[in-house]
Amino acid sequence: MFIITAVATLYFKGHHANNKKLFAVPIATIVLIFVLIMAGGALYQFSAVNSVSVGNISQNITDDGYGYYNGEINGDIRVDSNFDYLSVDVDFYDSTGKIIDSTIGWNELHPESGKTYKISAMYFGKTQPVKAELKVVDSASSTTPLYNETITILTSSGV
Image 1 (cartoon, rainbow, N blue to C red):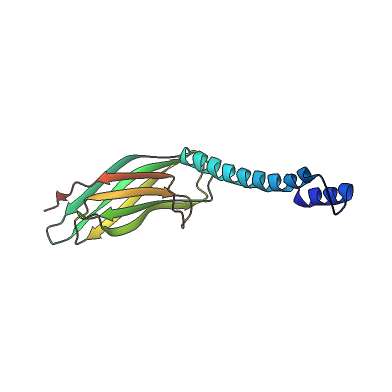
Image 2: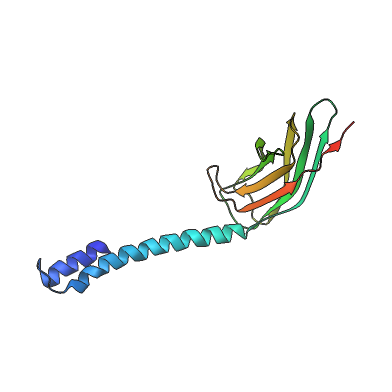
C-alpha cells in the first residue's frame, strides 16, 4: 500500500508535490497495519483463554515417614478449540514461596477439539510442598498462561 501511494503521489504531482495530504496515506496505512496486528493477537489470546477449561482437581501428597513427601495432583483439561500444542505445567512451592519442583502434568501436540484429557503431576522430594500452581500454556516459551490456578496442598501422613 505504501509503494502504491508513493507511486501515485509522484505520478500525479511530480517530485515536488504541493499536496502534503497524500503523504499521510502511507503513514496511516502503517498505523492501520500495526493496529490490526495488535487486535489480532488480542483476539487470539481472548479466544484461546475461553477454549480451555480445567476441573476436577484433586491432590494426594503424603509424608511417607522416611523423610520424603510423595504423591500427585490430578485433574481434567477440556480443549474446545484447535491448538498446535498445549501443556499443563505444575510448580510446587514450599512454605517460603520458593519453587521446589516443576513438572509437566500433561502435554499434547494438536489436541483434539471437544475432548477432555487427564492431568497427572507427580511430586517426590524431601521438602514439604504447601501449594501448587497449575498453568496451561500454548507454547514451550509462553509467558502468559491461558489458565492459571493455585491450590493449597494438605499433606497427610502415609505412615
